Length: 388
Image (cartoon, rainbow, N blue to C red; front, top):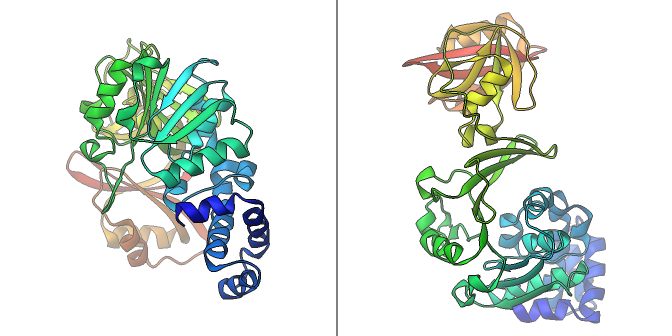
């Protein structure tokens, strides 16, 4: 879909085509195109069917808002789900003037506007900027949001209360994990942040600590156990904690406990705890271990063990039924003896290919178990567990 086709989609004739396409999504694609082509030209037919398909796919991230929004395939893939964007936006005071310097299709713009901010947004791609503008209008935020096609470098961060940046993490070769390959590159993003009174920088959760400014606060956010992003809070928005983990949808948050040192480690107990990924990324495993009265199996791996059945929202708990030095033959025999036909395999600190192992185990039976693969020191182990 190009810019002309998208703009036609916004006309009354285009809206009519979009409504017709929405009724055909899920039908045979050839039949859907044939039916629409009786009334609409090829470009509008393609644009309408693309949007109708993306709206249905976007419902998982944006809920009922997706029925009114517009998307590009890359824009939808890279956008933040609404719950995560809303959590982030709530930390910014209502009424703040925010510059979003790489707005994409506008998911974060919408969250900021919902939180009461006034947003001036730019995106280097004219089509993407047009989509973001249309989304603000479609959801009733046109009076709080302005969008233009422009490079991030054209924005003066000092003219705003807050700089928001979600640099693109894709290149022509696909997703990149190198901040220097972000667009804009990470050093340029930090230069812009330094000019603003406050900044909120959204980055990949795997960002290395060396790229985080020493005077910033880094927050890792998980949603239903899946780590979604890291947020670097700078200037007036940086908290004193330095590191923070947040779980959604509960909103539970954890920061370092200065009284704690490194977590102790020791032999496996009756239970094993798997910390939430946000706590692991934020280097808060010692805090989780303290919450359950546990110890690490290995000082360098984030599995916690203990002898009592403690509960915390920050970790999943499993009862250990058997622990054995890892070998395919021994693990297969142990699972067959227990009648396990369905195994959830987890690993940390293990080089085992999980999918290959699943095939090689050739499980059969009515039982189920959780198999945890890890190492203690240099020795690999497997634990057969059940959720507790």
